[in-house]
Length: 358
Image (cartoon, rainbow, N blue to C red; front, side, top):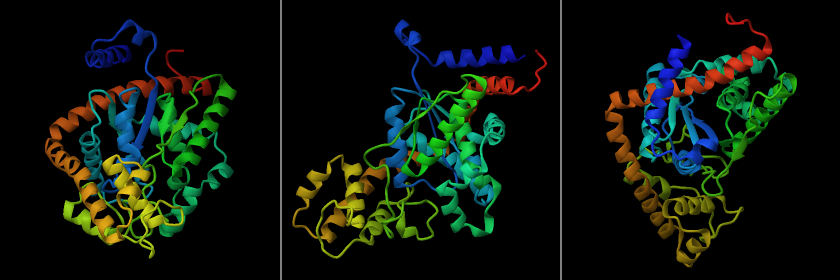
């Protein structure tokens, strides 16, 4: 039965591959894996720091992109909203230019191997290692009423996400670098104990737009969970809302449009403008030399609105066709499970779990 199922999945995968040269067969593409939680509406930071990079990288890599709904429930969720936002995230993936025919899109909870490998890796992870994770400390401070074991072991599940697919490269933000280091440590530890099993992944961090800051507190990262809605640009925001939010953004008082670590608010707006227009910082400084913040904020607002509008409109069209989204996710689930199961079988065999065929 298992061999027949694998053969069926192989056939489905093969039908999507055309004009493959002998060279590409001999040298398969390297693998990337990344995901976004379905705990809220996606933001400009997701677009510039993740989705734009995914789109570019997917041309060159064998790409696995997931909706991380297992990670999302470390914070309490309203079930109906979680379900709706999960499919929203998939629609935004496609609206941002990620081709479902050239990538593997799937929902994390649809691939049980993630949770199964996480349990095994939990048994090889020290309490001290997890205690040092700064993101756990930060989130615990914000959610004192719900400091749960899932939040504590979140990095182990993230490691499982990556290692299941033998990822070569992992697009991550600065705030996830520590988790990726733990992933590498766990992979090396397991390989040392049981022989080579996992590929050691490398991080990919974009140089432009990787970290978009809050419009109201520019020393903090823009977040979809920020209670102040004026702090965040959502991909679902209308043009008018985007422009108003940027006009209300916090800057300094010197009215000088210059990129400077000591001018976090204006530097953040320059990054937004840079991502939205493709212009570099020197060009932006020259363009607005002598202009006041009012003129600059209006220009940034219009540029960001123009950048997001076609994505928002495309998302609304894609989201209407839930049947097609389900088809994409069903095929993605099959492809992801096929890859993940191969890795998990190796792990189970090496740690000594009994199998009927042995």
